[in-house]
Structure formats: C-alpha cells, structure tokens
Image (cartoon, rainbow, N blue to C red; front, side, top):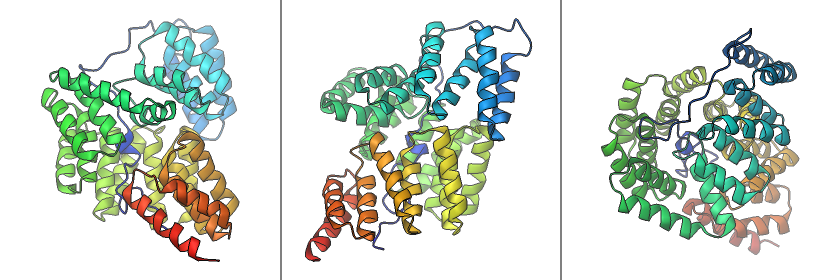
Length: 397
C-alpha cells in the first residue's frame, strides 16, 4: 500500500494535537465572571462531578448523566456540574441537550471561556458557521482548540484573509497587548506559518515571561521549525514552574517522540492523562505510541476513547482511519476519514489518506478526485505526495 507516514509528529511536521491546544491563561487572560457556587444541599457539586467521572470511567455514561441531571436541576447556580453534564450530552451526541446546558451556564457566567469554546464546538459540528465563529471568538485567549477552528470556519465563510488581516493589525498596533500577540501567534501556528507564529509568541512571552501556555505553544512551534533542543528547553522551563501542566506535558512528549525517546514520551503522556483524564490529546499520542509498538488494537482503543471525549478531534480520525486502512478494514477507514472531513472539509491530509483508501480498493475514480483535492493542502509534503500519486494513477489504465 503506497502511503505517507501516518505520524502527525515526525514525517510531515504537522501541528499535533497538543500543539493546537491552549490551556487557561494567567492575569492577561479574560477571566470568567464570578458565580455563586450553590452548596445548599448534599452531596456537594464537586463530589457529584467526581462520582460522575468514576461512572464514566467504568462505562456507565447513562448513570452519570442521570445523576448530574438530577443534581443540576436542584442546584441551577452550580455551574461546574452543569458544564460536565453538557460535556456528557455532547459525548453522547445529544447536541440539543448539550447546547441547552451550555446556554444555561452562560446565562450565569457569560464570560466563561471554556463554555464558549464547547458551544462553538457544537455549532461547528452542526455547520452553523457564524454562530460557531462568535462562540470561539468569545473563548479567546483559547482554552482549547479555537484557533484552528476559527481559521477553518473563516475559510469556510470566505473571509479568512480579512480575519487574519484584522488580527494582525490588532497585534501590530498594540505591541504591549499580550493577548493580541498570543492570539496572532496561535493563528499563524494554525496556518502553519511557523516563523511568524514564533515571532508573535516570543513577543507574548516577553510581556508575560512566566506564562506556561505561551511557553507550551512556543515550544511546539520550535519543534515545527526543526529545533527540538530549543523546544525542549522552553517546555522544561514551563514544567519546572507547573509540573502538572497538561499542554506542556503533551508538547514535551511530542518533542521526545520526534527525537526517538518514546519511553520519556510515554511517561509524560501518562502524567498528562493523570493530570487531566478528560484530555483527548494525550490519548491520541499514546495511541500513536501503541501503533509504533505494533499494538494496533490497543491504539484504536485510545483513538476511540479520544473521540468519545472530543468528537471534533481531527488527529484521532486521521490515525484511526490509517490503522483501519492498513489492516484492510476499508469501510471503517472511509467512515473515519469522511467524518474527519465533515469537521475540517479543507484538510488535505484527510483527503490524501481517503484517496489512498480508495486506491487500495481499486476505486480509481474516487481516488483521483481525492488526490486532486489533496493537491491544495497547506502541507507541502502532502500536496507533493498527492501530485505524485495522482500522476501515477492517471498513467495506470
């Protein structure tokens, strides 16, 4: 089977899961408005969330939803259980109920960036492009994957150039505005313009030199620029200050993977998973390490677990489809790639891998169409491979 290396981290230098992730920020970030934690009953909201998480870990999703739903209905001002209830509805693909819960949370805490990000994910999944853009914009500085989503959504709406121009003007006109520098750096990162990304993230770090999220993002960009030593140094600085920082742990694991130190990578990823059990990025990368170790059944389980946490996880669809295709489970491979493309229609890598799956089955016409789409990938290695395969397939009767 003619194929690209499926690694999202090494062969093609793609922004990996954690590199597209930003955790919550410090003083420079817009903080959620205060809210009143309702503790007027027993059990407490924290204990209910903890019990629900244990149920979810044991596969008892319905029990967790029932428990949280009952608690939230009698404690409407306790937003943490409500947010987790919305997450579980989202995981169960009940987007209508998830949206209702998130809107309720925002009626209490209108500046809660995590909830804006979650609601943006729902609207993006429903192809409500303008509504999704509004929500992801409210989530900035992003606590999750808003930058990549905003680039894709503005591209879909046809105003990406205007959006990027406005964002750059904001950063350039206000060089002492940490948030503007950080946002522009992350947007360039999402565009795979890594030199420009480094410039603005370095500006941001100069304004907030102790900010771990900026160090994490910058470390990932340095890796994409081919400087794992500088990436490791930057990430180590963050992790000395915040040893449990999820994003930095996953990003450092990606550096270790890039330099072939898989055991160190595995240790960081397991640490990250303990620190944040509902983080899908660590699971995708652990799945990759399982693939490297030729434990593909285990790898698939990790990818599916990641998608249960975040159904918009593009990297999980890519890796999952690759494993299915490699083991001739073509219907499953096609389904994985097509689901990923429903989320990111312009993704050249997914188009390329779908073309490979079609070609492996002798579906020549479908393969040709997908290779043509992949030629416009913003990943030059993907575009080059698509052009090569397209030419080869067109020479084949």
